Amino acid sequence: METRITKLLGIRYPVIQGGMAWVAENHLAAAVSAAGGLGLIGGANAPGEVVRDYIRKVREATDQPFGVNVMLMSPYADEVAKVVVEEGVKVVTTGAGDPEKYMSMWKEAGIRVIPVVSSVALARRMEKYGADAVVAEGMESGGHIGEATTMTLVPQVVDAVSIPVIAAGGIGDGRGIAAAFMLGAEAVQMGTRFLVAKECTVHQNYKDRVIRAKDIDSTVTGRSHGHPVRCLRNQMTREYLKLEAQGKGFEELEYLTLGTLRRAVQEGDVTNGTVMAGQIAGMVSKEQTCQEIIEEIMDQAETLLKLK
Ligand code: TUI
Image 1 (cartoon, rainbow, N blue to C red):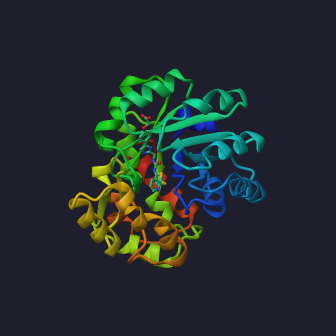
Image 2: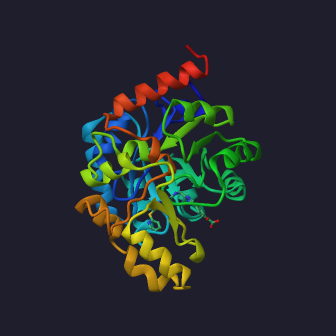
Image 3: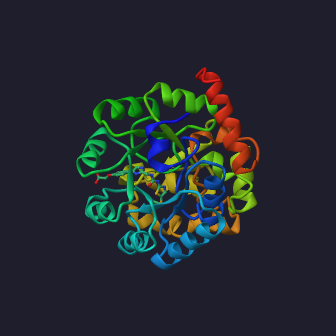
């Protein structure tokens, strides 16, 4: 399945791993890249030097292409934006904001820049600033989300820009890939399915919670403050949504979320921690290696698209 994205990135399969905060560190990124997809290191809220260390570790583990996701709400975004240039990273994706101020620096360094967008307006702006492609991410995704669904966003972004579009949000198997291609996407980005990969170092309780999740087990906190975050329902989300409904503001509720993603990912506290995951968690049913995941979904997609 050669597309403009596989050629642009030099990868075998049109599959990109989401740059999940606290989850997408060197082990997962290296495993996805070694299996023929594009692994991403999630910069999240990590300082530049931590990201530099991950980059070097991925390079030690694989000679295949990989990238870094720069989370633009991070207090360390400026630092991480420079580290990717210094380390000669070839692909950068961005999330949770507008990366315009870094675009010329990255482009001059020869980096392929792929912003994640949740609207047609931002996709258009990114193309104008020189983005090489965009990820159109629907609100089925885990973590920080926009308003539009993948089914509606992807074809509208495809019609609005001429750079290639990568679909994200709610894609977990070959059927999702085939559907995304029907909407005009030239690759997919998946997070939740890779969360439970054997090479993913997230706490076992987190993986078990995702594997146990049913179709309607996720919820969205922070909608009323303009900081919508999709995660699996638990004690934390119940408390958060109750206080949010009483009109409590973002700052007042920050104590419920500060550090709680780390608590779930590293300590396995899936009761009071934040268990970010997409709506497709209900379909994710087993741990597999990244290679098994990618080969299984590509085989399924190629059959459905009558490419084999
Ligand atoms: O970035 C993501 N997903 C994320 S980031 C993250 S870390 C975090 N943790 C707690 C609270 C907040 C963040 C967890 N998940 N996905 C990419 C994405 N970007 N989705 C939506 C957007 C987006 C939204 C608004 C991009 C740009 C934007 O507006 C830019 C503008 O200025 O118009």
